[in-house]
Amino acid sequence: MITISNMQGTLNTIYNHLLKQGCPSTISVPNGSYTFASCRYRGPNGTKCAIGCLIPDSEYVPQMENLIVPQLERDGYVQFESVQLRELCDRAQSIHDGYTDSCGDFGAYIRRRFTELAHTYSLTLPI
Image 1: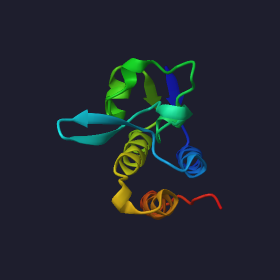
Image 2: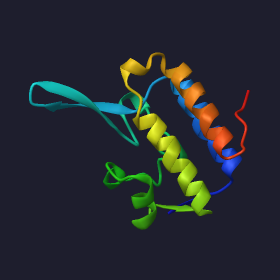
Image 3: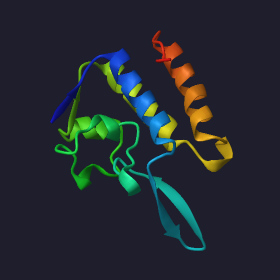
Image 4: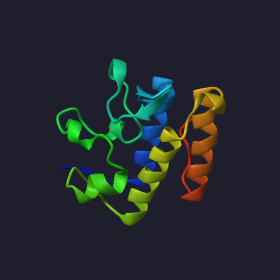
């Protein structure tokens, strides 16, 4: 089990990771006549989602996939230092998972949404 602590440090890590990666961590899943993007803690080409970047490869197991942040904690994969930190991580994951091509440029989307997230928790974004 990993322990996630420090609000500002966690926000910085997720934000920097997503900007550097430049795309969400998803796989294409066929569903009848269309295909949808399904978010993954570990995706193709080494991609990682917002919370996936906080989970060391040595701690990752495929059973984590399809679990939301509170379930990761409930099932003993992750421990959060506080309820507020779990909520921050849950919201960061929702931002990642909410990205679609209609949102425009991924980097601009992340900057905009994480600016709002940081403001909510009186945090700052790295420059």
